[in-house]
Image 1 (cartoon, one colour):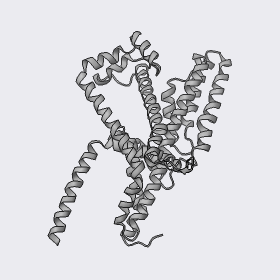
Image 2 (tube, rainbow, N blue to C red):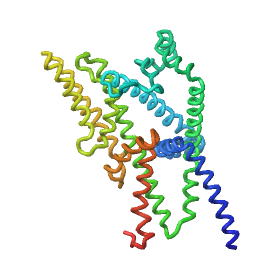
Image 3 (cartoon, rainbow, N blue to C red):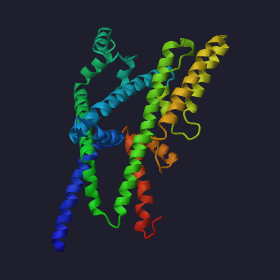
Image 4 (cartoon, rainbow, N blue to C red):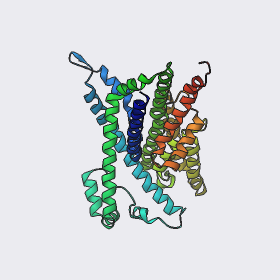
Amino acid sequence: MNEKRAVVAAFGIGVAAIVGYLVARFIAAFTIAIFLYYSSRGFYHRLSRVRIGDRIGLPPQLRALTTISLLVVPFVLLLSYTVVLLVVEIGAFVQTYPVLESVPDSVAWFEGLDELPSLTLDGIIAAYQAGQLDAIIAFAVDNAAFATSLVSGLLLNVFIIAVVTYYLLIEGSTFRAWLLRFDDDDIVREFFEAADAELEAVLFGNLLNVIVISLIGAIVFMGYNAVAPAAVAVPYPVLSGALTGVASLIPVIGMKVVYVPLTIAAAVPVILDGQPALLVYLAGFLLLAIVVVDTIPDIVLRPYLSGDTTHVGLLMLAYIFGPVVLGFYGLFFAPMVLVIALTFADTALPRLLGADPV
């Protein structure tokens, strides 16, 4: 009997190692899929209460497709476009205030991209005719193999994200029930319930709060620049909006650490040039930032988008060090690891060491 158990255990370890290797190869896609799952799970469950004729609730497959179509796809497209805008503004910032002696060859082609075309067919055609896409086309021609690998890898990762998110929405409860089969004195149940709730609070909460505030800030700052004179325009509005979203993690001061210095920096040249009348625009910008970017999201979003037990300082460190150590997906992966570790230390570890449950 022991020999059979050893063989079965060895086989299971081998299968787990293979699965772990495959997941590790696409860890970024799986991480983003888990984030999208927790971000859209609430909407998916609410669709089960939709009444269609005499039937209450949509089938799970249709609910998952509806959730991905209405929430995930538009959110990813908007976020992707914002990221590209952010890259362009960072390039402009680096050219204006050089922080590198030379631009790496791998990203030198961005120097020829001064602004993005509008997201329409006519806008893309006009940009091509005006030569705005020459830098991208030249890079693609000179690096055809790299470009092909990049596009195919991107499509593969997008496919994995879509499939994993879809099946997590449909089979998430089944997977949870399977995990609870290994329960021992309710330790596993307590840990997974606490970790699941806190992951949803942190991933759907704090990180989504950062992203939403970044988008709101970028839109408000760009809208302000559209009506304000150039002398009092906000420099790099998308970059400033992204920094505002990140600053929302800072306790007490929060977003003020971004938009207040922006206002002061824009006001000083106006005062020195003897144009105090333009300060009215900056007063309007400060009012917009306080009300639309800071106060309203904090009142409306914060009660719903906040973690319950995860320490804000540790979470901020996870957001900082995650991308530095792991790359882009570390922004999602590091908070997950932090939440799981803290939840395990708070729920399962004391009971495994013999402490009385609180």
